[in-house]
Image (cartoon, rainbow, N blue to C red; front, top):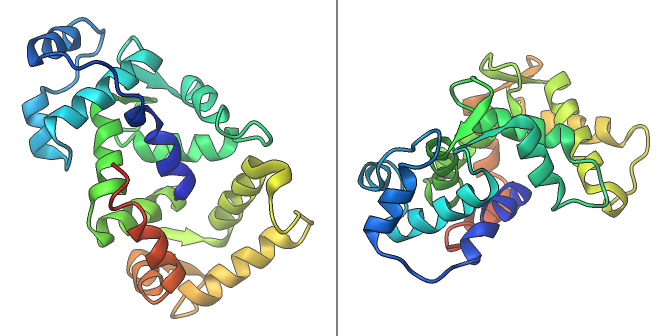
Length: 215
């Protein structure tokens, strides 16, 4: 999850000279797909109006049309992992943000997901992560899905992967995942099993806490 948050918060650090509310509201009407109003987004997320303005400007810089398709998303994401192939992980990440399954991410989709990752409760963050791993959206994580995610992460990290990728390394990670997560040993991991196992894992809890004060 660290890679997700690190990438998506990059634009928030590139603050520009402040403008008034009228300028931002006017700019929002000029894209092809106008996002929700600032007041509504502020009520629906854990961001302030000023933070939403900053996020919107960064989003519009990358996507002037107001929406991101998968190819554009992959192109943006790949810039943060120049030594690896981030395309497959970006594909899964794109699907996690595309909650309506219409092949595009609008600003509302973006800030809703980002709000959960950065400012959500622990359970909300874990639920979002679970849905990222649940590739076929059937409510379970199976071994095939976890293998795909692990391979995508190794491909994304490229030569910086540690330990160095060998043929059986992804399978070892999947085995360890299921040993910890699959409480009833039925071959799949449910949301509740995932949350329970993560809450018992100090490393996972520390990684979640790192995001609380990112912005």
